Image (cartoon, rainbow, N blue to C red):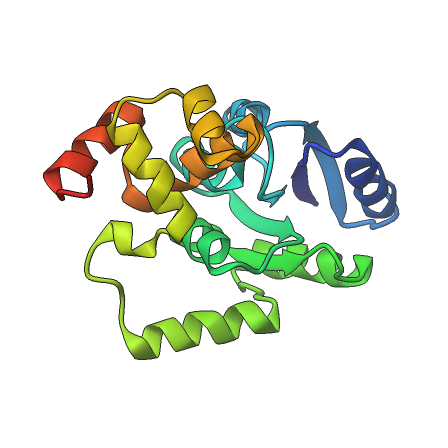
Length: 209
C-alpha cells in the first residue's frame, strides 16, 4: 500500500484528490495539510511514501516546505502539483528536492500513475518542465545564486538589504503583502539562506545595493 499525503491550501483541491485516491486500491491517503508548515510537521510524524505538494501557499510555500520535508523525511518522494510553469518556481523546487513535477491540469489517472512511479523510484516531469531542465543543463548554471532571481525578486532583495519590513516593501512597490511574502520565500530558497538577516548579509556581500 502506497501511503500518500496531500499538501494544498485549497480545500476543494484536497477534497477532489482525496475522493479520487480513495478509489485506488493500492493507495492510502494518510493525511491532508492546508499549509507548508503543517505538511512538514505531518511528514515528520507520519513518514508517508509520497507527498503531493502545492507550490504557492501562504506561509513557507511549496519550495521551502519541500526542502524541509526532505530534511525530516529523506525517504519521502515529493510530487509538485501546481498551476505554475515559471522558471522562478520550477528550478528552485527541483533543487529543493522535488522528485516529480505535474500540473493541476493533469488527469487524475496521470496523478495516480505518477504516485506509483515515485513509489518505485521513477520521476515524472510534465513535458514542458523536462524541456526547461534540459535547456538549462545545455546552457549551464548561473554563476551566482542571485542571478536566478527575477527582476521583481531582485528589487525585493535589495529592499530587504535596506532593512525594510514586508509591509514597507509592499508599500514601496505597490504590491500586496501576500505577494511580498511569496517573493521573500522564493528569494530565501534561491539564495540558499534561512532568514531575512542572512539575505541582507548576502545583499551587502555581493554589493547589490
